Length: 585
Image 1 (tube, one colour):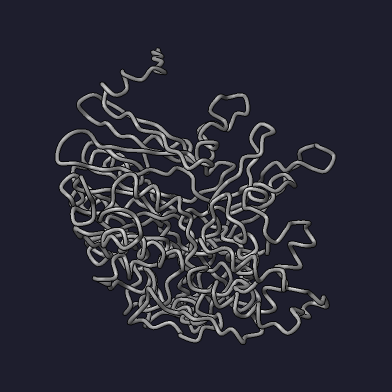
Image 2 (image 1 turned 90 degrees about the vertical axis):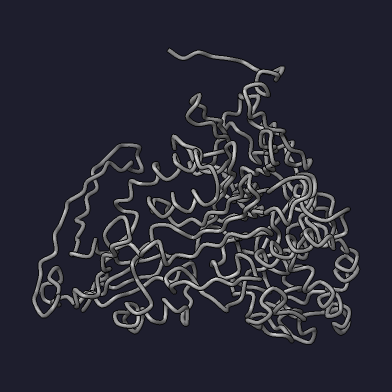
């Protein structure tokens, strides 16, 4: 597939209140997107201290509380937020002595620390490799950020991170594990500010749906930004200058001590933004997030917040559009399924429908463009490519989905990746540009006469033919994960295609595999009484041990669109025919 990829952690989360469910008081969909290999996998558990806490869900390796899950009254999930939890300070240095820097007209000496670590050499032996780390009053000096060089010449850049000394996260999640309603969730987030760079989406038994971006945030108010950002900092912070993989970081004037992050009396630690000004929204219909800023947690009630937390009145990702449209149509009963409002069945159906918002917006125009290519020939990158075979393949992909039996979807995914080329969605040749007054439905209507469309399709066709993949190959032929020598087809696709069930293929150990995407998926329904009703699936399975019976079982289930019915109460657990009890000394 083309090289354009979503590599960072992400997620979808949707909370539905009493006005949006059928046969219950509220529901939650937790759909975090995490790596399928390595230390950032999630692991499923239920933690119970009788009379104190009973919580079920999943956590990152080694974390002694549930990060995403549900208890008797509240279900919650998290998505990666748009706030940059760190910032830079541009400090003027003495060119003849670059470890001294200027603050308030006086020179200060940087501090240093020598660090040595053992590094394996080519012959297999270990040898010490040392570095001297330098730091200013603002924090350590860095010479690069997200792959972008920051030369240390007439100035240096110091980095300050709100989570460097954040030991409050365990308190946050242990209290979330015991929360009684969404109002208590807000109180926990405000009084701990322990969440690092995550949004929180929750629902409760009373029928409320909560979105909250309350976390550890640099105390950079809009006023402080106007006063202290450097010229380059203004371009980055306001995203006038977009650099690949670089968030909207601040670069503040380190020559003035007043430009350090000020302390706020409402914050729980020095330099943090007051939690009182951080966005939150409680509604009875729905709220959600798919890694865009808080602005459209629910389009009926757009949120305002300090710029440091994200943008407003800016294009939303296709995945955000798909999440909003999915919620609206299900609540209105206009999605083709029976009835109105979410049920556990319809919530699962809609996630695993694997619909592509990009295809909804662009497939028809792409087919029209393809059919109008003279003689079906496009000269691109020195190759004369006949794209005529692609036209009926794309035209036949009427479902717009990334289910395992879909044909034409893989061709469209490659075409879309080439068309985007790493750009924002708004940069494509749309006839109707983005309109902040209609952010869920714009931009739209591709310009079928654009050479960008022809060239992208030609590159995709050429890439598939070179790889020996038929243009009409079913997704199951090309998108697989290997477990114990068995290749399991995986449905879903890239988030940039506007598919909620994100699946990112790539190379693992030199072989094609799944590297990232839907991990622990959970849907929870509350009713007025009775235990919470939950279904879940761990897409990459619970165990990383190839000899475990749980190495591929849930992956096979995920492939088939299946779910595990959770057992939450003691009675439900005791009724399991597979129950095993082990008492630890």
